[in-house]
Length: 345
Image 1 (cartoon, rainbow, N blue to C red):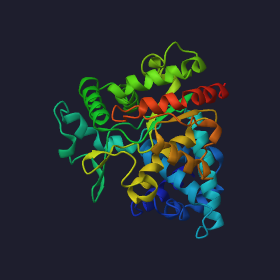
Image 2 (tube, rainbow, N blue to C red):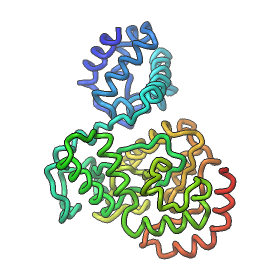
Image 3 (cartoon, rainbow, N blue to C red):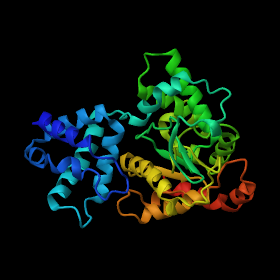
């Protein structure tokens, strides 16, 4: 039965373009296999999903999440809605059962390019073989920030990786691909993200401010610097826009265009929504800066996103050296930040 489900879905998937804006991206795939799906056992469903996940991890995750979001729309039949609900529940069970990170498909798409390229002296503005989407002056490029630490106690969330972080990630992934063929994709992505996330002067600023509001005491560590060293198990580093975004070839700052008013950026935001869906309800989120906070407040009101206001630390400045008012913002908000941290205990 499981094989029958897989076959029918795969046949349809060849002709169904994945589109984030579609109200129900799985409908075309699952309508044709609805009888096999609804009449199969839990184990058969899990077997089918596991095979699909192993074959195309990123797409099945996105499809399931998009289906879960769209299944209440008026143009979706109840039968398809039931299938969507089953799929989302079963996928979560599968994640818990396997206890491992599902490998996103995008890394596979760019893996050989990254392996064969020396990023030591690369000008990212001139690189076009990593492009994901480009409209007008807004460009989204791939960099290997896919790894999700779903057991994290705290999430540190920026806007999008900048040029420095993107190049650091590409250099590390290329190095690992060339020098150690025994490493799994998952391990490569994990090591890459640890090295490149909030790298540069930004990381030092971030550590100082996190220490000064008592995060290390909450987590039971000596310094927040350990989150980037020996205690990376406690943290998930991420961005609202996981893939680097550039506006007029400059690091995207959260404005011009705004994330919530731009179709390309809203589609990229789906990656973060998925990350939230697989993280614990007890996870603490630290949005970096006002632009990120604005989107968090929007997501808290979105009933399809599993995010509560009580999980979010508000008022934390962006640690970038370019944020000239960082020191003043932090001083003004420090007492309130400390109170919020204590409330998480």
